[in-house]
Structures are given as C-alpha cells and as structure tokens.
Image (cartoon, rainbow over all chains, first blue to last red; front, side, top):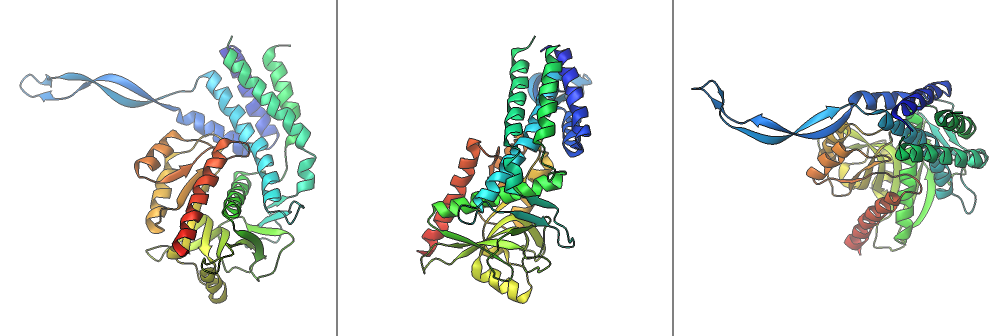
Length: 154
Length: 224
C-alpha cells in the first residue's frame, strides 16, 4: 500500500473506533501519535567555549535524542495493533481468566465490582465469549492482512 | 475496489461482530488485565506444586468470582470479594493468598495499591479480622499491571520505582501487555524486573510465569 492509501485507511479505522464506542482506544492512539517517536541523532556539538575568540573551540560529533513524527505506515500500524490489543487480546484474556479460575472443568463467571456500586462494572461470561470466537478469528486475519500489505509497500 | 477499501470492509465487518460490550473503557481493560496476570500467578503456583483454591472475604467457597474494579481494602465486605489460597501442602511452608487490587502499608506507613499481591495467609487473616492493611513485609510477590493499546509513557516507570522503594523486595514485577522502550530502559537501569507483551498466545507470558515460579521456588526453599 502506498503512504496515501495507508493514510486513508488509518483515518477510516480511527472513525470506526468512534463509531463502535472505542473512544478510549482512539484516544490512546491519538496520544501516542502526538508524542512522536524517539530517535537517536548524531550531530556536531560544541564542546568548549573559547572566551578569547568568543566562539566554540572544539566541535565533536555526539549522540542526541530527538523526536520525529510517525509516518503514514507507522500510524496505520499503530491503530491496527491497538485494535488487536483492545478487542482480540481482551477477548482471549477473558477466556483464559474464566478457564484459569475454573471450578473443575466449568469455566468461571467473573464479576468486577467497584466498592460503592451495586451493579458489576464488568461481567466475564464464558458462554457469551464462545459465540464471538468466529468473528474474532476473522478480525485477527483482517488485521494480519493489513500488516502484510503495509510490509509489501507500494 | 481499491485495496484500502477492501481491507477497511474486512476489518469493519469483523470488528462489529467481535466486540464484547463488557470492555467499554480503558479501566475495564485494566481490570481484566490484572485478573489475567493473577491467573498467570495462580498457574505458576500450581506448577510449583501448590494446591490453589478460592474463597471470599467471609471464608466461603464462591461459585462466581468477585473482583475489585479499583484499589480497595483487603478486609472490605462491600461485596464478596475473592482471593486465591495457595497451599504448598507442606506443613513447613506457610500458605499464601493472592489478591487483586488491595492496599498494602509501605515503609513510610502510607498505603499503596498492589495490583496483584501474594501475601502471607496468616497476615491476611489478621487483616480481615482487625480491618487493617497488610504490611509491606508480608508481601511475598507483587505485580504492577499496565494495559495500554499503544505504548507506554515513561511516567509509569517513575511510578513503579516509587512503589518498589516503599514496598521493597526483589519480587516486584512491572507487567504490561505492550512494550515501551523508554520504560524498559529506565527499569533495567535501576535493576527492576519487568515483563512485556504479556497477552494470550505470546511467548512472553511463559517468561512471566517463569520469573514468578522462581519467586515461589525461593519462598519454598526459604521455609523448607
């Protein structure tokens, strides 16, 4: 995919996150992009000040840390990874938690409660998760497909 | 249709069908990740020969497991919060408890949250009876859990360094589902232990399980 195609897909996926009420994922992607990526740069640095000549006496190359913007391919990669973490991995985790805390062979139902709430904030229900497995597999493959296309370039 | 349109359709369709409505915020994902790490700790204890059972704050065996969403008091009876009981089936080795999101009193006497805490069971029983927080010296192992979808900020490493100063021990782990070069650099520089990419199906989960097993091994050896 070309940088323009990556940019277009990135924007559409960011809109999808909003549409599916995954604003928390979208916010994290946006924050990460605004922070940029750290890079190491070798630059000529002034090492001593010559007061007689009012200028640098010696110049030497040194490594500095800088920040660069993410490119279109990297931004697309970031949103793809974020969907994988937020949707695919959390579903896998729910399955592993309910199986890991199983009573005998029966996966366990798990409720997460805040101290001052009467209703659970999260309910992990194994039966509801099993119904999602096929769609999850399709999503996993679709995300991998995007990553292959990014890798292949133009 | 252009390739980016095909790819978008593929993801859009699958995403709608795959979403689980219970994970609708970052805090829901954090709670789940802590429970996932707790499950890994339970698994490590079993691999070290322990029998692991579950009980609630009243000492009853639960059918449904209740966990906290935010840090709380180990002795809280607001809900029937549950913990795991770890018994190495050796009378010389004191049993342990594994808790999610409880306060522990640090060296300064101030309380701090431990996302996953493995505690001396006798201390935990005293805490439940007397409505007090476990002391830092009773924490055998703890994990600070961070779930993020796109990288980690270095502030998380600073927070962890502060926590291990207060609740000092070699078995304090910074555990995350993602990676963060700056976080890993800071923690490694200060000799702190961390595990990244901890998600189902990734080899780093085995690495986490291994270092936790090692902590249990030391605990058993100390009391054998």
